[in-house]
Image 1 (cartoon, helix red, strand yellow):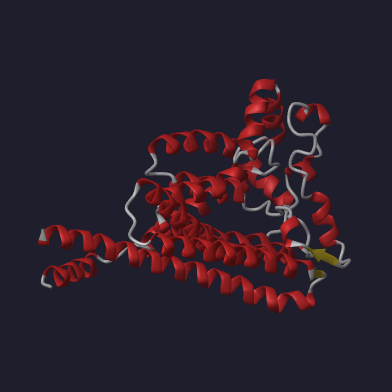
Image 2 (cartoon, one colour):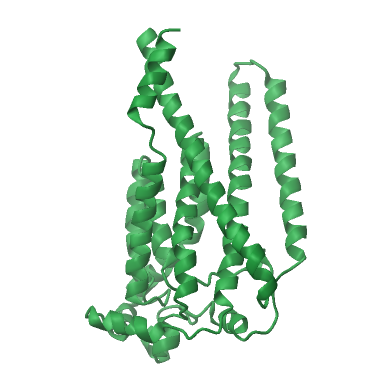
Length: 342
């Protein structure tokens, strides 16, 4: 029994330390982007809309209300061990975890979104020509790949659905980990997104691009089986930002503007890693996101170099978060021995 308690406590120490480290990573990313946003906004044509404060207020009230309800229910249940009480307790704890995760994730999303728009509001020359040259030096012909992807309607549909399946996967990961009551995994996923943003943000600011579709200007028949606006959803917003005219940013209506590096690719790798110990879903995520990464070229309109760098960022983010979230074995063993002796 003493040995069991020591081992259980060692696992608890490791989990708690990992949680603390992940929170530090997330907090540093929020502070990093938040400070840059505050310093940059006064000198940019991007304006932080007052509507954002209304949205933030409404979300905050909703989160506080949900937290209060869950806490109240748990208090009323007390130590009731009945089946119904256990089910309600599980749902209440899950709600608390979802609220806590949202309270961490939302500030990160706001800070990185504002940065993305600030970085896009530049008059610096676009670098699509240079990136197309890099692709050519790698032996990659983007137009030929687009034509091949469009040749079969079924395959084109697979690429379309795989590309657009990434968005729902992010909340899905949160919900799955909340259902598993894995707070450590919830924070790990947010920390992964924070670290990948720390790489992606500066790179997109230093190397502005508009995407492969704007550079190659393919004939419509080359992507007739793909989305009519494939790879061009962001373009009008990008032009508005680069025009220098005042731009009112409403975060809840923001478009994804990152073309280099491919954040789709990085995020796909993060989702696969996040589901690594949920075997059936891991296999599905691996297959779907492998196809999704391929689809970032014809459907997402990325250059090949965007995808290569995005994949590197995803892999590097996983490695960094695993290292920083790891607990030194000596510290865990020491804590376990301390508990075993009590």
